[in-house]
Length: 243
Ligand code: SAM
Image (cartoon, rainbow, N blue to C red; front, side, top):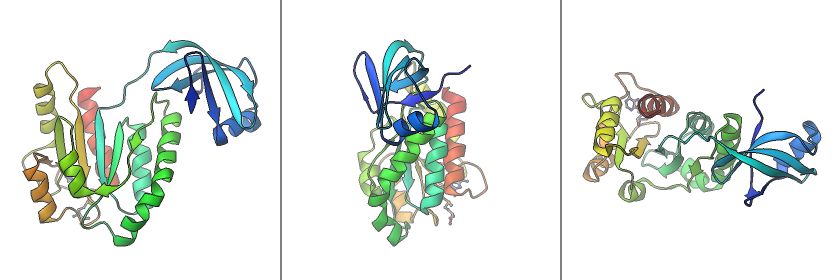
């Protein structure tokens, strides 16, 4: 039987601790008790562990042995902030699909009230990523950074290959760009940033800024996808090449 997997908030070389709502759920709902076995994620590593002590505020585990972890996809999704419920669904699905990080950005066509509210929403986005990582038995939680202006992110990007999803692009496909990145990275695993626009898409000025900073415009096909669909499709294409 597959052991349940928990992501610890605190750890050292011999123990790991879960606190807050997770601990309360384990104590009250799952009636966890000393000796119960589980997989515990601590610092990006996965351990076979055993419950040492349980309370409704804290569950402490003894770490028994490290087990094989599954690395995240080396992909950062640069997501233009858009309708929060759809964006949160995209963060959950991207987490399940193995994204390493999500960088929310304020694009020109991000609705003003969403741009203003985004900073207050980030903790919720981080909780969604944490829960989705746990549910999908990941060995890490994607990093959700604070929202910043698109132009700052375009200029700051450090990944080996920077890709902007552009629905009007007709020649370069994402598959082609990923193949190129793998060739350029040779034996290494390439790192990718993939930018997804808001409802309304990128402005011509934003497209020019991507281009001037070495981002590759790619197509996901002839149909116009919702941003959340584009996120899932892009990660599936990348995973089919890198995993
Ligand atoms: N014209 C659409 C609109 O007015 O809403 C464009 C926005 S689309 C909903 C959101 C984003 O998904 C786009 O900015 C682009 O990044 C990505 N996207 C959607 N369809 C795509 C496609 N066929 N190829 C590449 N990217 C696509």
